[in-house]
Image 1 (cartoon, rainbow, N blue to C red):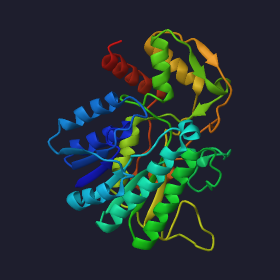
Image 2: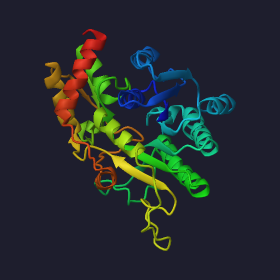
Image 3: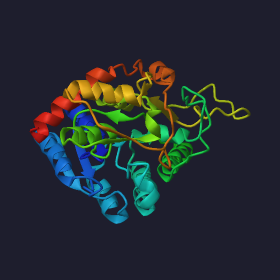
Length: 335
């Protein structure tokens, strides 16, 4: 297939593109190379992809409607993995415009491209953050997600709603994937594992929010990618059991699906830190802090729907995944 991967210079985007290239697909990637974090890391990811003869890249912002339309006319991909977005819960509090531009306008532009050019399946990144103020664990696709507590979460919820409308109106197969705290080699510098590793190796304290009383369903990047690729290969279809008199948030009479991708093994933050300390061979100095705006105390993914749909559930143990990240970090930064 010819697959468009948006955000291909990003953490999940690079790994997804690699997996598709490795199995023989043609990958056309776009990314705006924003300076939200270190652009040289994004460029290093692109260098890895550029070694594949079936990969082509163009610097393009999905929020720029006319250039994106011209790109669609030239390329006409068979399927789309949409991973480009403005990430980060805390950043959304201080830089809302970036989220409106990329996550709303940009997402609409991608949907329009898919609609007008016969894309067979759009798989897009949602987020566990859509569960917002929900306290019932594990988080299930059958739960309502009407109480986001950050702008980032609200834009991801909006993506799911807009995708459903396009699926219903134009019979476009779309699948949303709610990622749960993705980590691993080539990860984002604004994520906890990266921040902690950099600080510990520099002899600086690490900031631990909610005084360490946090639980996350940390999910290793290889598991995320396997889930993405398996879902891409099985286009969404209408749910024959959908009952509009008693609508289920996880179902639809349109070719629309939404799935959690999480490790289904919620890990206390302090256990995650301990795994990192063991991998580094260094004990961290810890700066305990209160909960930050937009954060939630716990996440935990119910992945039965994903397993039923594509026969896969993430399983990489945190200690193993953290160890692989540390190996990459030391090699990449030569520390």
